[in-house]
Image 1 (cartoon, rainbow, N blue to C red):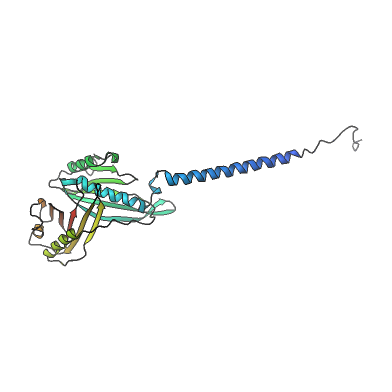
Image 2 (tube, rainbow, N blue to C red):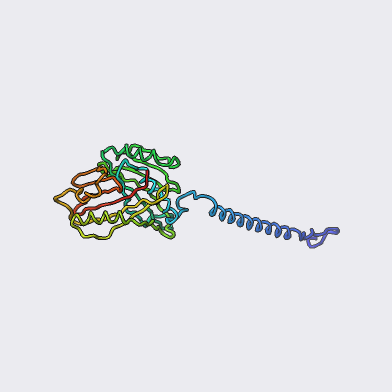
Length: 288
């Protein structure tokens, strides 16, 4: 009898505890996930506010700028009396990629140096020896000549190399960074330096145009200052040195040629012809 129910047979119990146990497990899983997420957010918050940056992409341009400024001041101090130095205008290059989805910018500042001879490697080595040990500065050979490399901290790279006979360019650069609030260069009053640059332009027969003042903090306090000016034409029939006859009293002439003049005294003076223009930079560097 296929439809008959056997005597004594009882159907199995429904076990209502099984779905309740599954719900408890699900609640524990959700709670654990939430707790882990809260912990991860807390650790991230603490790291951002207390840990030093581990990649340069964590430091924006406005945060890295002061590190570059201090490096420039320290480089002028490291040159000391081994050359005539002047701060060069800063350069900001935009459009680099911090990440595939974020644009950035790179800041570079530098110091140009003119020496009496042509032994650029000797100057680079002297500068490297005077930089802080934490910078791990060194000079190595390359296909283009000797190169100074150092780390100024905060992922700011320092480099020095020849930029012509008897001439060196020392730079500090951030690499590609988020722009943030942007870079604001340090400012300083440079009345004496600006007046000397203006006098030179007038003695060359040019109009007294705007003077650009560049500054950098010195490691021992104070500020390095460079005043830059230029004029068209210039003293085609007379040497560049003629414009600095007053400043030359008691100073040391480091270079004196038709196209370049370098003087080290109370202030440092660099003058050069560049095409149809004459440029002058008058600098009070950081004490070495």
